[in-house]
Image (cartoon, rainbow, N blue to C red):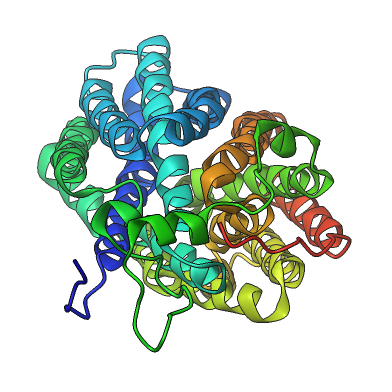
Length: 422
């Protein structure tokens, strides 16, 4: 039966995917940035150990990123995303029980498992609900979930610390974890795996006779990859490996900046936790449309130019943060990072859909996210070692700049993917 409503359920899917990113990354990962100074002080952690907690989280993320995409492709994205979000929320709550480095590392690592199992399938799910010409835009909107996390934690965590003292970091983990648990329940009831289950075509799919064709059989024919893409196509594609290399540079460089952002402002520049929170919130507000803008740029100019521009701008933000310690320098660095912050994951999700179609996009995104996770796992620990050895975090940000610019250069050599309609 043909639907007469002009509202497409794909927009609900987009909102749910945005909220999955908000929970898996915005709260579970980037919430750590504001919680870290108080948590580090209370648990008496070194910079290397503080970076080690972030590394543990990313190793967990890495372990589930690849298998999460595969399970999503083979079974149900709805189940994988919802259950993984529940794990994220529970582990965040349990992080509040940490009494030292090892216990904190354990809970943060398990939180990473849930984040990898929810974020990757959520981003890849958009390839099923949006046609190729809309994927960059949709993915760009979804990654704004990370921005919402910054906007919330920027003022909330300092408030909790002021109310509860140094132990307020425990309250912060409990409250943020509770929010994630709530959204895991919402995802379970409202996510849908593919548009044909609703009798719909993907948003942006060509219409027939001026009307949208809502036949599930025809939708399957339109959305199935023409080339019968398989896991072998993921592992043997030169473009997928090239994307993986670029993604590694992003993972390594950006996580140094976001992990030690508040710590650097408070311990080396002398900002209060409220002032650091304000800058973190500013990054959140600036970044809320970054994925949308750069996803559109990648749709128009091509994925490689979008990736190159974002990587160059972010590298500039890191080096300015390191060498220009005046408020003007911090503001410019925040501005440059904010307007590009979460753009690369969105472009990568769109590129995987372009290359392998909707069915195998989750597996492809999971595969390249494996390398993204390796970069994230190495970044904080390397940065922490550099900071402990030199007595300052500034060289760590210079290191992040060098790696980001390598990613920009590598992006310029990316071949154009063969667009698939699946």
